[in-house]
Length: 164
Image (cartoon, rainbow, N blue to C red; front, side, top):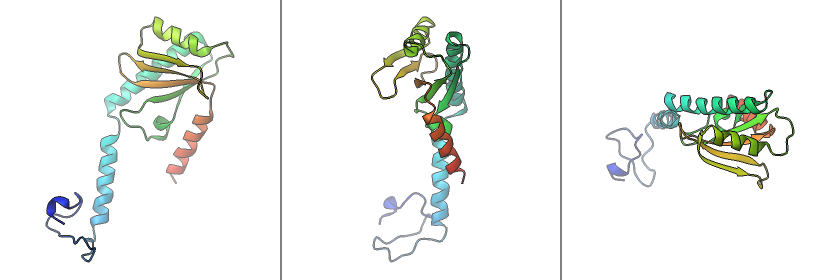
């Protein structure tokens, strides 16, 4: 292998044979591990991105409690598990609104009225109907479902399994 073909975690000056006859340096696996951890840190949302995401959730909570005072907006998916990327959308469920003919339309109307979204789509035909949106100010995408706690249970299970 030429030096340019060497993996970036390979110690400088070490040569590897393509047939595997030259063993890995003893610390190469530790170096790879550290590089993977550095990549994970690089891929995490920045504090500013985290703040933007939190503000989108706050806006959704404000609207939900305006329409349904007992409603709670809860995150699930990659945000809950801690596996989100800066480009990940928010997966949100609104828990507690009473059974109304179409809560998605009520939410969509209020989002339009407040001019909080640059994109808005009500998807009534999906297995789990949602409101898809992109927050105007923060440019964060979100999918909003209603009274669907399944993703929440799965997210907490994943978080629990990841800590073991």
